[in-house]
Length: 453
Image (cartoon, rainbow, N blue to C red; front, side, top):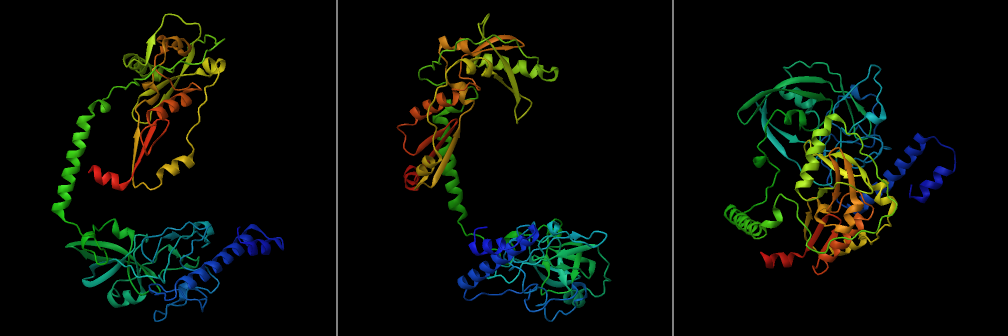
């Protein structure tokens, strides 16, 4: 709690957690309302299910006064645009939000199970209307993707649907500020939209000034989003856009063709000097660990593929050898084979250190840039060659025999430092380009991109 006055108030006496929570919320609400009044000198109140501050109804289920809907909100409750921290709230893109909530057998509402029902008195008007027919009557419903259920006030029911008997419902609603509202009932109405007819459920509530089009209807009715009143689509020239797309495609194709060798399926290879590892003394020879029969075939395939790609090679003997560790890949049934060098090289060789990029340096490189690109190297470590004299330290013992790594393996303690040093050397002369292990990040100014295009 950052507010000093609130902290002082809470420390003056012993309170339960719930009491502390209520006091903290009330103080935060007061400060937010004060700030809202200061920043909005001319608020526009859009009344849908208007929540008042002057009256506290005895029972929501007995409220039938539709001429005055300012009677749902006690004066001590939080404002409508305030998120209750202990109540999971589901919001839509409009100023109204509804969600269904079942009553337990004893009609007890748990605080942590309450959801938003009303969020009204918006400071700006932004409504999307859905014109359709309900019971062959022209209607305009307000679209609210935050509504779980479509709702209509009692006045609408009496005017258009009074011939349909109300059916009891077990659905209960909870307002955004926590009040419980009991619907009058539910009806099934015939809805016609764009020449198609549907029989859909509609909840009838005691009060309200409009009908809300909820998500349960949205699942059944395919809306014509381009022609809905209230949606403004950006204007653009189709011919110019198609021409720009064609130019970009031609540019991309030419780049892919020019640097075709960079996009081959096989593993690349760093053309600089091979890496010489620190000397390992006293490493022991460890026997191969058993591999579950269910993945033996996949492990053998992975080892043979690594041998074919030049990552490892068979050796007849070795002074030290590490067992292998197999890790499943997210895409497909393939497995990744790594050496457990914690018992050999990592335990007997000194760690090579190199400073890693700081997040502050990354942020500094971003300054002034508007176009960003990230390149992820394929099997990045395996693109770095290991010197012949250092390969003996990286022997692994597998179910197919002994193999020595010819490329930088995953799992050695000096791997990140070695790889980062090489990447920094490669990108040293390229402005606005940084590397974090296997990712190359380039940041370009918009003016430079426009010149290139």
